[in-house]
Length: 98
Image 1 (cartoon, one colour):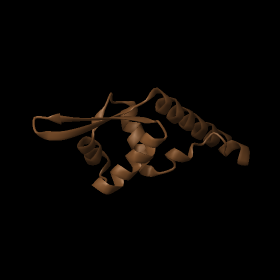
Image 2 (spheres, rainbow, N blue to C red):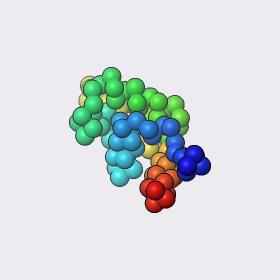
Image 3 (cartoon, rainbow, N blue to C red):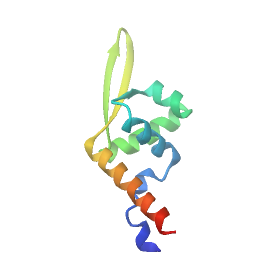
Image 4 (cartoon, rainbow, N blue to C red):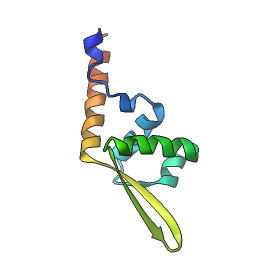
């Protein structure tokens, strides 16, 4: 049983991180506010999970100003997309073997 869990990526064990990567896999990029609204997370909770994914190299963060307002957008990296796909494949394989 333990060998079935080896493909799981701890970075995606959190429901919030699973949600973040899921929406970034199907969108080129999303702003902080768009992610917050889609996932119904608080600012602090979302920021913590985004930072953790960024530190692992799974996200690219782009900060800019739109007019006079700051705008931060997030994009999944190729490394992040591969890690997430591998995680989902491992999860699917695990379920098939039960």
